[in-house]
Image (cartoon, rainbow, N blue to C red; front, top):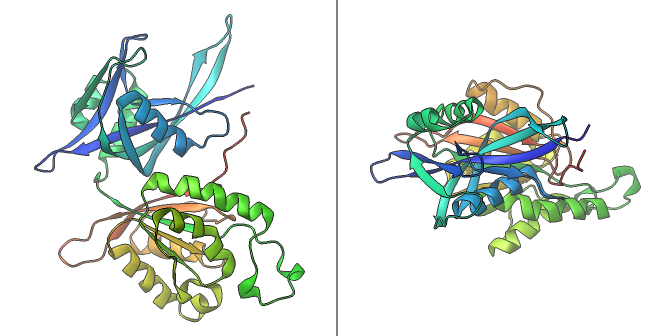
Length: 308
């Protein structure tokens, strides 16, 4: 059975004084108030669709944050049939933009989350807004990336530090070059392995910056001083902006586990496939303290999932 895949956002902004408002759209076709959302285009990821739909329905450019959950329901199809539909929602900070009414959306309102929950037409939208409101809107994002495919180690006769990405890995790196900017990165760090640096080099080039190498995030160094490596990651977290950090499969699960256990974040199985991304959300530090993990969302691949 075909499944309709869609994505949406709780698009938010902060007024002077710190009041957070979220965007709701009115669709004249259904006479409803809902969160911005829409179907994935062919070859599109959920993250890309979420930002595109936010722009198309509200007129505002958006930077993604944490995942807020996925809702499922059935929609009418031809005849008496219906099709299952899933919508993946993200928190998204609104940047510049201007709303213009169109055939699909004729009104946009900015409203505080509690009032938005009462105004939306569907219970699942209310639930997603509640999940958004359960954590501060202005959390900071760190993008922890495993390097892309680099072939088999036993097939490489040279220095393993210099093992490059394979053709499949280059395709994954190109996809990361599209995916990661949706979260607004402004710094790029990497373990000093060629395959790690190559994985995020394109992102750095597009930002007009250089990749900063971090020896402690390479597998051999990490297991000699895992506490020091976690401390270095925390220093990166506590800095400004939204960093991309590329490391290896023997490092990432342990790093995420350490952060989750330290900050009491409930996690399922922690894995890290080639070119996967952990979107880590942190509360801003208070009074000189360190930033605290509040959510960790896993994106198993930067490539679009084929339509079912």
